[in-house]
Each structure stands twice: as C-alpha cells, then as structure tokens.
Image (cartoon, rainbow, N blue to C red; front, side):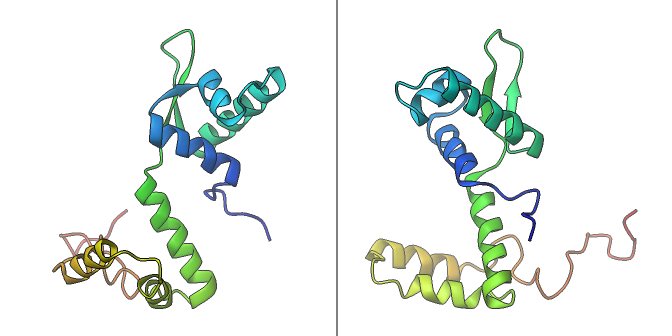
Length: 147
C-alpha cells in the first residue's frame, strides 16, 4: 500500500523536531545535529531530505541569503492532530474515543496532565470542530455552495 503524499517519514520528523525546537536553520546546522562530525555524504543526505520535504510542503526555504535557511511549514500540533486522526481511522474505524480513553487511563499521566485533560474536556467548544466526522463543515453563508 502506497504511503499518502502528506505522510512524514521518521527522518523528516527528526528534521522537523530540530526546526520546531531551534527555529530556522541551514543544511549544515541541521546536519551537525543529526550527524555530529558527519561529512559530505551526511550533508548531501540532509540536503536531499530537505529538498523532498520542501516539495511536500513540510519546510519552507529562505533563498534570500547565500546560505539557504529552512523553517518548518508544518505546526507540531497540526501534525499531531493529523497523525491521531489517521491512527483513529486505521485502528478505530474513525472514532477517537478508544485513543482518548487509552491516553486518559495511562498510568504515567501526572496529576497536572489529568487536570489539563479535564480542562480541555470541560471547555464549551473544545477543538476546531467536535462534530467534524458526523457532518461537513459549513460556511456562515450556509445557503451558498462553494465553487
């Protein structure tokens, strides 16, 4: 089965973690974090990886300087949400309840984690759309169709 175009590989995720944690970086800076003491082969590997990620829309490249600088084009929370939705689709017939139940019952949750979860659940409008699975999102002008 082919991987969806927007899926992120573990190598790409490693690069995104660097960009999320440290901010924009050059190929050399990213290579030095991924492969301390690495040489030309590792640099070329990271360069190819960043080219692929740019094509997929995961990173943005600033070409205004001599040394190109890359930044994340994917927000960490957005990626977490996308991966959890995909996991729910493949393991739980689209329902998030089994995933959330498992996470909420995890033994390694701290009291602070549990309080944060309760606060999110108790929010009047938690998340982008609680019922996005059951019906499509509508615009405020519900009588008009999008075209």
